[in-house]
Length: 171
Image (tube, rainbow, N blue to C red; front, side, top):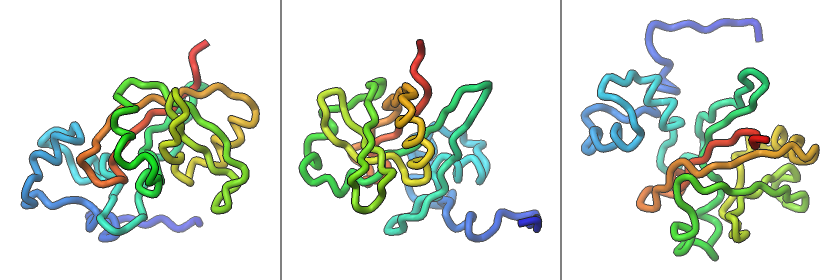
């Protein structure tokens, strides 16, 4: 892992995951992600996570540790598989709501799975797998975490339905 790759252009594996400016509705897309019309390709890649239709692969941002404070921003995973809430979840959450996290050790797919629940215990989905082991360890140690709803988009495809920010609870 000592090799460094450099290019004057964005690598094609990243470049193909960024919407083209000639796309119909591009201006609406930029506005929806709160990007300026001067946003460069890396800004767009960061905002969109490089998500493509029918492709589960995305680029998630790492958990951030700034001055002893852990922070992350991510979208809920697995909501589209939660058929029992498919038509009602959008009435249960709003930007600014605080949700809670719960370990799901008997999850057959991932023993580190972390559920996301509303204040009235509606199971919305899961924390993205890339964060599971770290958050699982924190929750096992009873580290208090705040999960705040930042964006709700019921008209979008499922991978964009809800965006959260995570940080330690204030004392």
